[in-house]
Image (cartoon, rainbow, N blue to C red; front, side, top):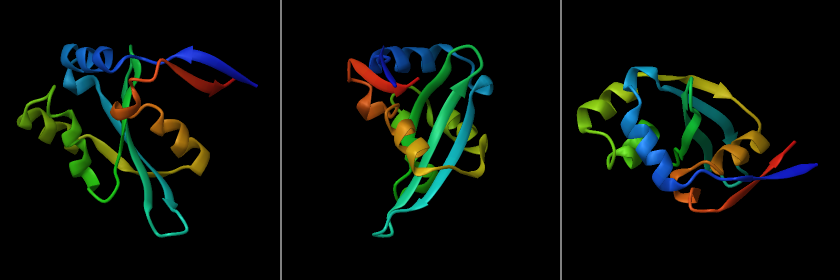
Length: 117
């Protein structure tokens, strides 16, 4: 069974990132292995204790430098600090990886997300 929930707007996420303390954000690095073509399926998920999941950033081949997507709302010094907060890779399932991709900054413009209940 699935439920339609309103997706957070891209602007809302960026505004929230500007308002919260950087030290309160935890960055979780999830690893779902590689697909059959050898492409990595890894994602960084930014969480805040009060606001929940702020966004997710697909790593691709960039590694920790994929966090540069946040440069419009963070300074370079803040980005360096955030990179040090990244956890080790945590194994996850492909289904969970795909769910996380719904929260990528690029996909935040969708009005609704379909999430399992």
